[in-house]
Every structure is written in C-alpha cells, then in structure tokens.
Image (cartoon, rainbow, N blue to C red):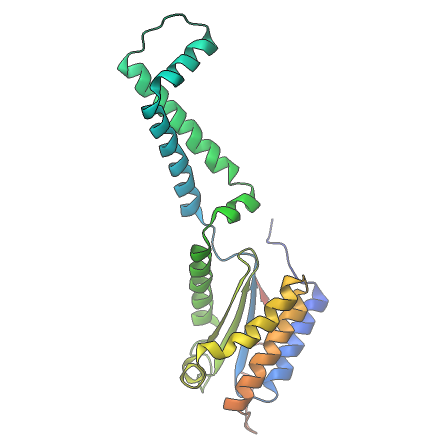
Length: 227
C-alpha cells in the first residue's frame, strides 16, 4: 500500500503552474517536494521503549516487596519466600513486557509523532531536505540557481534550500516571509494554496537577484514531487 497523496490532480496542477509562472521572471529553477514524513524514527521508538523498561526495573528495585507481594496475591500463594533468582526473573519479565508494550503503543502514529522531540523532528526534516536537494537541485543548473521547497507533513515543518549562487546572494533568513506565507495556508488545511504562496514569494526574490535572460531554458521539471 503506497503513501496517501495529499494533493489531488488539481492541486498538483496549481503548484506546477505556480512554478512555471515564477520561473518566467527568473533564471532560478524551483523544485517542489511534498513528503508524508521525513523519517521513520525507529531509534526514537526504541529509546522510549527502553526508557519505560528501565523505569520499570528501577521501581522494582526500589519496591521489591510490593511486586513480589502482588504476584503472590494474584497466584494465591501464602508466605512464599522469594529467591534472588525469582526476583530477577520477575524484574526481567516486567521489563520485557513494558518494552514490548511501549513499542506496540507507538504503532499508533499520532502517539509516535507526539513523542518525537521537536528538535529531532527539525533535524530529520533538514537532513531529508538536504538529501533531496543534493539529488534534485544542487549543481543541476548551469548557473547553480536551483532551489528546493520541501514540505514534510507529519512533522509540520518546511525547508527552503538554495544552490551555491543563490546562497551567496540570498541569506537564509530572507526566505522567512515565503515560509510564513506558505505555512499560514497549510496550517488551515490549504496545502496547494500554501505552496503556491511560497513559490510566488520565492520567485519574486529570485527575480530580483537572478533575472531571466532571453536565452534562458527550463533545466528542471516544474511538477510537484509527492513522496
């Protein structure tokens, strides 16, 4: 089963047309990518499961009589003397159960993404955007004027990355307004309109620094790439 698409055919058309319109006035080449998520976060899932298991071991260590008494009560034993081996087996069993239970709970995607720290989401989105930028935009144009607009839905984050010539003239903070305009629409559920707004703003900035020459040719595809 493939990743569900966030935009229908009309949404894809809007974004592609916005890219084409923006590039009419600039030598810059805009690449747009819309991703469901930027990472699987398997390491974060394991970290939470291990943390819960370790916490269970700590509690058993601090209050062993409570847990051994609870087990005796459940199985109906009277005055049972627990050996060290039995206590360790109980502790290991509880830790394993907690580990598995926490891992399974995170199969519910809303909980899984809620438990991922914000800084990790930001870092993974940036890493994914950089990887896609290197493949799809970096050094792909004669003038090193490729730029990537990347949106990651599950993390609620976006990136705008420019090739060497763009980075030399346009500081990263310049894209702030484009990012704000884009996320304002997307936050309201209008993904295509948000990307169109971001593309428009990016195109205006590129046109200022990299106006289109008469012999300019379209070097990168205008279509939205949805992953």
